[in-house]
Length: 97
Image (tube, rainbow, N blue to C red; front, side, top):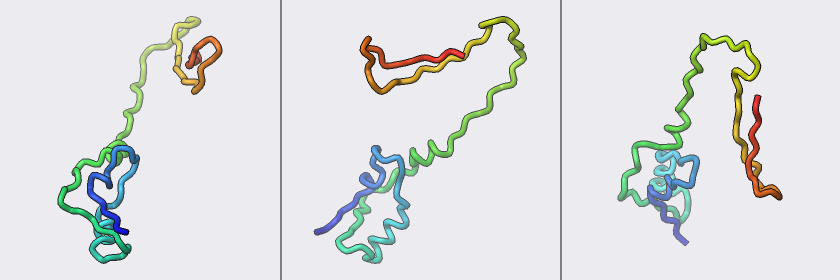
């Protein structure tokens, strides 16, 4: 049997990774895998979204000038999915700190 890969298959949106294109080309060019051939008619997208996302970083929070002294003057909260529906029909829980 033969395996045909195109650039679109190598960068499928379902994948959270990508193949090193030079290594895949080397496999095809040198016949290192039997029945493997790379269709190079389409050029790869120069922007790899998983790589781009992996290189992103968050800026640090700015140092605040406020000092909270009263009860409940500052409240932190977050929303979490339980993954299952409760008997009451709810799916989320919220912690308040």
